Image 1 (cartoon, rainbow, N blue to C red):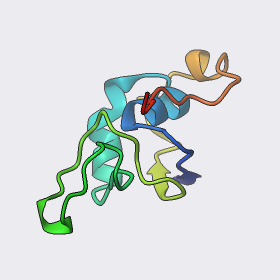
Image 2: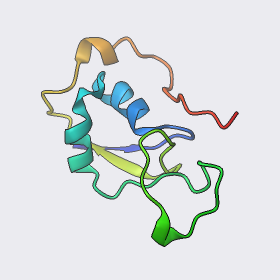
Image 3: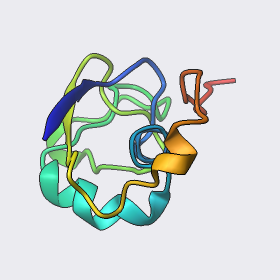
Image 4: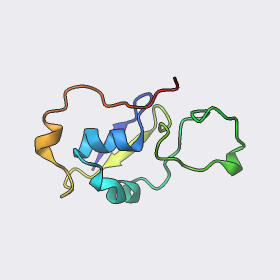
Length: 93
């Protein structure tokens, strides 16, 4: 396993593409990271902590860390070898 720091505006899907080369690793990723949190206010609403739900389409908490299974059979090395920029797709605009 390796630890990866979440970059600003990265969603679960961004990390999956960047680290695994595919979104097919979602179940494994969630199993390795059961306590994921979204960036506060990413949905544009102030919501009490007790009512917050995790959303895959919103960015993860900036600077938090996630675990990536380095020996995973889900990793598509031919894809991640070609990614040479940060993968962040979320925008508040």
